[in-house]
Image (tube, rainbow, N blue to C red; front, side, top):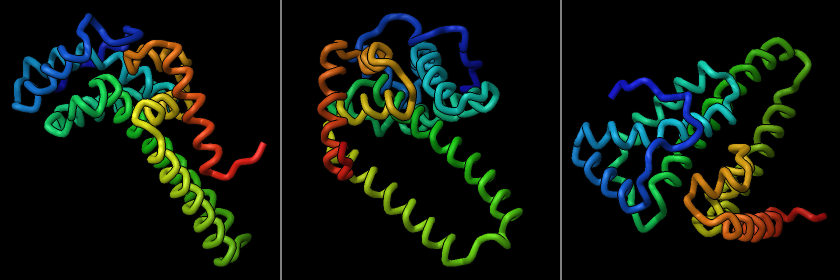
Length: 198
């Protein structure tokens, strides 16, 4: 399973449609290492591309991308073809892992900064700020859950992953006009749910 990531690529290697990768994923779920090698070659470039856009640092991105591929191996049995494509599922896991790494790094930096400036903050200020951030985060997660699967994946890849409409369409293997429409509708629903006024 410790295959080197083929980072030179710009997208999923080789062909393979939704059905092919779904079958490969089913074999991976049964512990088929050859199937995992096929899955790895197909998804590693996409995974790395998403991760590096979020994390920015290449060395950390390589680590996170490896973690994502291990997650795909370990969680293969959880994949449900009816819930979306394998590439969409992998892209979602990649994005979550990348965001977690960024948040972890930011949290570490924030802890250091807070330690240095502790005397300038009261306990009340820190608790109030954390509570506000947590409430906003929970509201955003709740609002995202209200979107359709395609809307949620498209918005997540574009907004958090920094992908263009075309890259989102390729990642989700969905026609570009459909992605644009779903993203527009999804963003409107998010705006309304979050109570954002223009």
